Amino acid sequence: MDRQQPLRRPDPVQRLRLRYAKAAVMRFASHRDIARALERALRRADIPVAYSSGFSPHPRLSYANPAPTGAASYAEYAVLGLAERREPDEVRDLLTAALPAGLPVTCVRETAGEKLADLVTASLWRVDLGAVDAARLAAACEQLLHGADEIIVRRASGRGERVLDVRASLAGLEPDGAGLRVLLAHATPSVRPDDVLAALVQVDAGLACDDPRFTRWAQGRLDGEKGASTALVCAGAVLMLPPGEDDPTLTQR
Image (tube, rainbow, N blue to C red; front, top):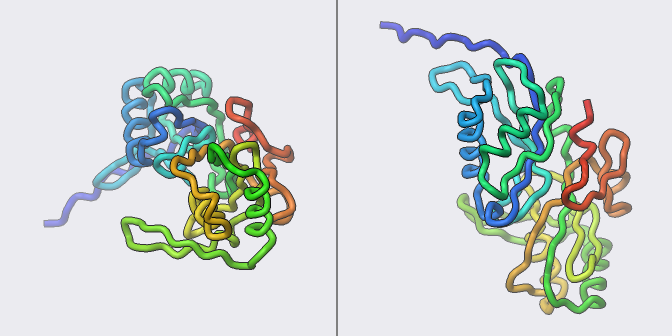
């Protein structure tokens, strides 16, 4: 007996691009935890989510380059498909009210369906190191950014050890008070700011830090040649934003 094919569900009538933050204790949540929290919030807020077809329908909710567990972020992105049209600001307010503290939806804009991966090709990070020798940090940054063409680090993962070339993704690096400002191009496999710190420690072991803090400030597209700028560009505007300011990424059509 042939198995009956599942009913094909209609395509979303509206797509919304969400920017959200994960801060405070939520920085310790995994991407899977964040995704579950967002799906629960959509149900609680009674937002008409569109679902995929197939035998196991799932919400039309996709993500781009989520921040790693343990890192805070003010620039996480997702695209949500709706079965009925809603005002973007209403969706923002309803979702934020339904989400746990530390996981606010900071902006929602309608999108024509552009791929997030095409809009966010780099991330601007802040790495807090605590007490650090400013001169040694500046010298190590200069050597890492303009020295060898290849800087290899190794990172343990659930799928075994990963070998990463930090230099290939490092688009900008500069001291910033008691820490670093790091601009990383998105690549596969993904180089993270803790990989950059590991590379710096290879250059100068005295820069090892017991409790570094990683915060993503923004995502966007690279402005100019790698190594020549620590800015992002989106919708024609240079983007170097501290937490809480508006982000031109969401206004791009």
